[in-house]
Amino acid sequence: MKTPWRLPLGLLSASQAISQSISVFIMTLSGVAGAVLATDSTLATLPIAAVVFGTLVGLIPLARWMSLKGRRSGFRLGVGLGTLGAILALSGLAVDNFWLFTAGHFFIGLQQGAFQYLRFAAGELVPEKHRSRGISLVLAGGVIAAFLGPWLAFLGRSMGLKSMLGLAYAPILILYAVLVILFVLTPELSSATHVKTSNVQSAPARNLMAIMGQPVYLQSLAGSAIGYALMIFMMTATPLAMQKAGFNSGQTSWIIQWHVLGMFIPSFFTGNLIDRWGHRPILALGLLAFTIDALVAIFFQGMWSFWISLTLLGLGWNFLYTASTSRLTHTYRPVEKEKAQAAHDLVVFTVNTLVTYEAAQLLKLAGWSGLNLWILPLIAVSAVLILFPNRTEKKRSLL
Image (cartoon, rainbow, N blue to C red; front, side, top):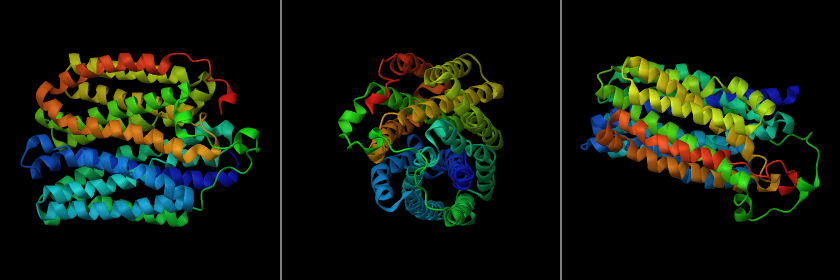
């Protein structure tokens, strides 16, 4: 990659690291905090569902904002909304109000929705031949989150969930302050000017149904939606399952840390693997990791079982999400990118909203092993949907 793109790409990666740290913080702490504040234990994961719902609600308006004002402006708006959400969540803890606490998570979700476009911004910054690597390297910023997120959650919990003015959520206010600084430093983000203009780029935009009706688009969408849903469903349930099994918050934070490492460490080489082997083998590896993850959780118990299972869960997500995102970028023209990307993420987070809310209820009903048993048929169906060969994938004329 040429030097002019390294600084903005690095800043995008740093922003991804901070955003994912916030996400890990919430996944680690908010379910437990929700259980403390809520009168009904089945509502414990509602704050996490509110984050996912906020992400869902913000996707299309934020995509539209970015198309009019630019990527940087959209990311700055997201930071402002997230900061408001952190203040509301902290206030909810301070006054022992579950619904105010949950409302704050909705605004944090809006920020997370804006930052879903970081990976697409990275793909647009670099030449087409480096697209998979650009996407992968921005996602790799999440490695920092594997250490920062759980540590801040442990620190926050040590401050008390209902005492000391709700300071458990104070750490993410600091993270939002860092994001403000990063986007002061970040230059305007525009597409790589050295990509040659072609008939494909200058062709008129198609309607959304024509874009989404392509077999490759649908397979990319299935890979992202299923991979993300499986990951967030099990990750949401993990802190509650470990608490029920008698593990302390430090042990839970350690497991979440390994899960996040599994999510993002492969990003340093996933892009290269996609360039070398293609998308389909990486998608298959992701599904294999999910399968082994579920089998370990079903047949074994104890700390090491959670460790292996959650690490493989992160690895499976990385392979499916990175390969599916890279594959998706070959299905739309530059003039179509906002609506194609927004529609993709809208479906992904609609599914995530539904499964996140159900995590606490299904855990209560079926237990940890039962949850993992439930996902095996879904993995089998996913393999058919995602890996089924189609003849149009290599035809650039489809664009």
